Image (cartoon, rainbow, N blue to C red):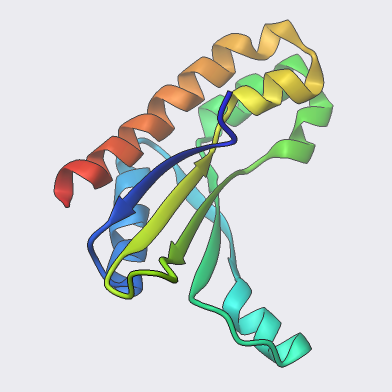
Length: 134
């Protein structure tokens, strides 16, 4: 099992972020949280790094189903989607979505399998749409 569903976009970071937001929205995901890792590391540690954004994506019906199976699953929500500049290719951006199968593996709760499957289908569709736009 892979940790992430991944694609590389031949677009600069800012454009890739907007495309990622749109692809997630098309699959019913809203962005609940946003962490600008680059800015945080610069502010807190005076450390420079490439643009790196963590989007906390939530599909409310899927989250509701998962929480109905196991309340502690909220520890693994929302689904994180990382958009980061490719350090080796400045015109390219990596987009990585958490593999929802991790919820099942980490929790050991087999009743989460259908929710994880549906979430993975939607996240894969978003990643595939980004790849198709390239």
